[in-house]
Amino acid sequence: MNDLKAIAVFCASSEGNDTKIISEAETLGKTLANENITLVYGAAKIGIMGKIAQASLDNHGKVIGVIPEFLKLKEVVHLGLTELITTDNMHERKLKMHELSDGFITLPGGFGTLEELFEIITWAQLGLHQKPIGLLNINGFYNDLISMLETMVAKGLLKMANFKLLIVEDDINRLLDKMRHYKRQPVPKWLKADRT
Ligand code: AMP
Image (cartoon, rainbow, N blue to C red):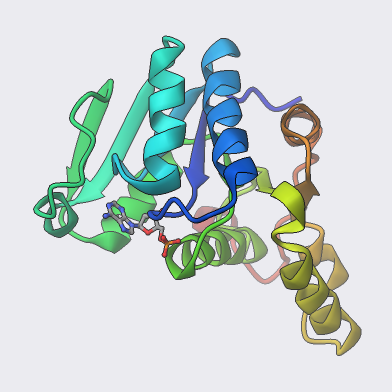
């Protein structure tokens, strides 16, 4: 079983207009706090990002924000976090978030969120890490994306084994449970052990 001490959450820097998405983000923040799981995220106080962080803090959770210097200047950074880590750039930020976390959860979001999800799943596909990657499909938000991934599998452009790296759930507790029971995938033969 995977010990989830810290989870990085990728989500929108906007609030959007679906109240269910906001309330589920807050429930996730609260759940992580209650389960003593540190929230690692992009350090913003705005959007869905701000909602999950605040919910976790309000429930005495530990929250680590990781933000590149240039975004900090935008006065959107949450200054009440347990810990704030500043990086030189976006690449360093993602690497830091990865290092600090035992798993990843993606909530609804825009380009930034998808970019983070696909980078972390690509690293898993390459065998660079074996941490569970969850997709919280709130209100069917990601149904079309999942259909797109199924098309990629059907067309032979995405291996079924790699598609399965993504743990899709619409319920927070079931998602955490599946992430805890996620069986690490074998590293591709063409990668040497020292790359992982
Ligand atoms: P998006 O899904 O396009 O709203 O982008 C969300 C992701 O982009 C977040 O997970 C952050 O990593 C990053 N991001 C975008 N805007 C900000 C911001 N103002 N402060 C911190 N991170 C941000």
